[in-house]
Amino acid sequence: MSAPQVVVARKPPGKTLRLLLDAYDTWVWEEDRTMPRDLLLDKVRDAIGLYTMWTDQVNQELLDHAPRLRAVSQMAAGVENIDLAACTARGVPVGFTPGAGAEATADQTMAILLALSRRIVDGALYVKAGRWKDWSPIVLMGNDVFGKTMGIVGMGRIGRCIARRARGFSMPLLYTGRSRKPDAEREFGAQYRSLDALLAEADIVVLILPLTPETTHLIDAAALARMKPGAILVNMARGPVVDSHALYEALADGRLRGAALDVTEPEPINMDNPLLTLENCLIVPHTGTTTEETREVMTDMSVRNLLNGIEGRPMLHCANPEAQLR
Image (cartoon, rainbow, N blue to C red; front, side, top):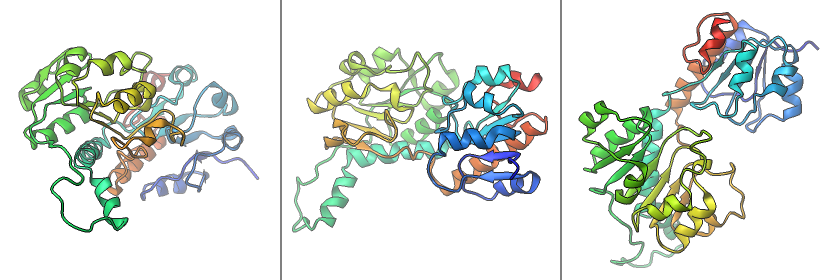
């Protein structure tokens, strides 16, 4: 049996995959789990196109197994799992889907913040366990979100979507990042702060920044100690941005009121991670962009990226545009 021209390492939702299936001899990994590495390396041996998720490692080893590869396209906003330098050296453009999940991620940010602050999950479990015997003025006591000061670490596209929602809760906004954003300051009334100042002032700190060597464990024990006593941390970025051991200590001793995490280190989280023992830590399984509407957009964008890359046309969004010039 001949090797396929295009390998889809995880079947995406949505209808646009049909464009690939109609255009090329395409092999699709149908199971909803990461494709085994040895199988992936075998399947790409004659592939000209590779469709990936962020759980697939695209590195020099894979490129060595795929000498005919013309393009990689990933259904994700980040590309930390892809060796861009190696792909560029081979002239392989890498497509990705920045911005496609911005609104859904902002929705999820507010959802898990509210769920933590108002103990929504605890309340649902309380009822299902048959413990709701009478009304009480103190049972499942939570905290207001309205009017609290939010600090956004990373005022990019998603950060702005979060800021827009926070305005609906009359939340004073602080932000920090590599540079000031005068337009965000005008639109949202956001005030720029250094990271240290933001941590000290904000009631709620939202992390929505890329994972880089510089941002790995950006929120470590020292940063957590600088946070306002009783503050809440929301991580919508990547798990390694936060030192999880230090976070556990800050939550366990009550210095922080709580943490809501859409991401962890590692993923999936180890079941012996002490964060799972805490009532003031809400963890969901990296579902920030998991809506039908968003997945449809991401699939469409990533499939069209791959088709363009294979056929020598500019991708809609390319993480290494210099590779398209080779």
